[in-house]
Length: 262
Image 1 (cartoon, rainbow, N blue to C red):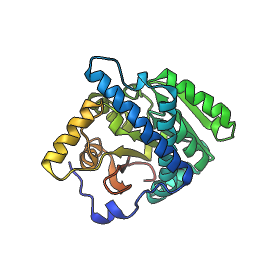
Image 2: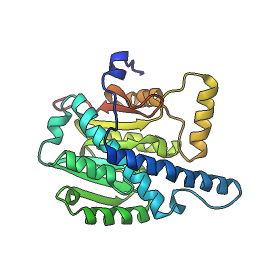
Image 3: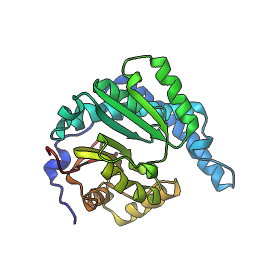
């Protein structure tokens, strides 16, 4: 069953990244993207490439840029989702950060919600090593509430365990995303929310085809915000809402597992 998202639901909250530290990290991440472009060209020439082959600087710059997303989720998205602020303010609340990388987003969420435990999972042991270094260097109370796991999202097996799940969907291959979605829906507590980072929907057929090809070629998937909205509903989640970021930029899609006090 599909779901209609009204104009008000799309535009009621626009997520922005205003702080200087985030802007600097984003600029560093854009520079790091040049390294990735070179790696992609190398793959076309039969050489190795991909996230596992990026140097530590690239991984750290990309990861630090995600802290802005964490602060935006905490400051803009969470307050707009009914009941979620109260959930995350409760002792023992839990957040799952899929593809945590260097755990910058996980740490931002831990700082924003001082009673929550944040679990960050990633398939790359090397990047988790960088995350452990950064968390140890931070040495804060919040960093002590971030738990890192070497795990694949397709293997998530917890039931009704989390109050909030963050999923950066464009980074997953379509097969992995298809396997992960029902597991993540089951991992939500009744009344809890998942927030999914997605690409914006392209209206022109040619632009959509190019965007889909580019995403799949780079190891991601062809899901956009509208397709993700339908998918979340198909897995039994409700109250789907879309949060634009910048014009032409990512769209955050949120959905709730119905039950309990929801």
